[in-house]
Image 1 (cartoon, rainbow, N blue to C red):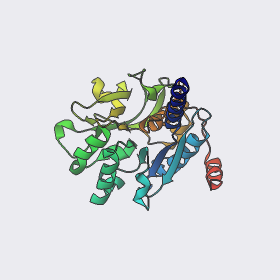
Image 2 (tube, rainbow, N blue to C red):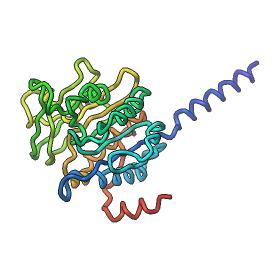
Image 3 (tube, rainbow, N blue to C red):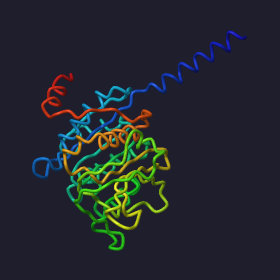
Image 4 (cartoon, rainbow, N blue to C red):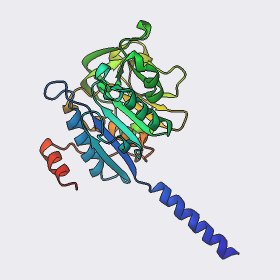
Length: 280
């Protein structure tokens, strides 16, 4: 009897270990470029993120796939994703709301608990899809909805503060100062489980309006993150900036964020190109 119990315990431990060791698939989607060199570098950003996630010395069990032009040619690639990360234009050019078919495809992923994350311009969503934006991401840049809830933007060099130091996404991240195009006064889901991750006091005297990055724990267990910065590609050279975004991506996929944050080093374009060319 004792041997049987020991055997059952070993099997249970093996199964738990296998579950914890699950490889998590992250889909990175880049929209079409719409600005000059160094700005809105969507393709370069997802290519860089692919390499940073794959090369991190303290990150394991993560698989990345990258897609361009705002959408995978075969939308079934989303069905097995643990998180979907979008860096693209927004407003009427938002690739996820380009058709009702795409909206339904993303809704299916949200409904099954897939992680979701938007950066910079992709946080801009038309009033027509504001309900989905709130459900998917917990907040969005409101530019054509209720005037009393309209969002705003400023480009400036400013200090950022981290109001939720116990959250896994800010592990290994220290407050820093840099220049970006910040979107603020974000329209958040009333009563939503929103955790502010980054605030920029220079944007507003109202703390809630200062929030430029947030985590959203959805009711079905899914995790979402919105980050309204990301205009300048050179900011990827900043260690705290990279760590924050890498941590957020892994968190949305229910991956484990290391105690000191995900380690990375900036990779120049030529090396990114060479690395990706070697991937079968």
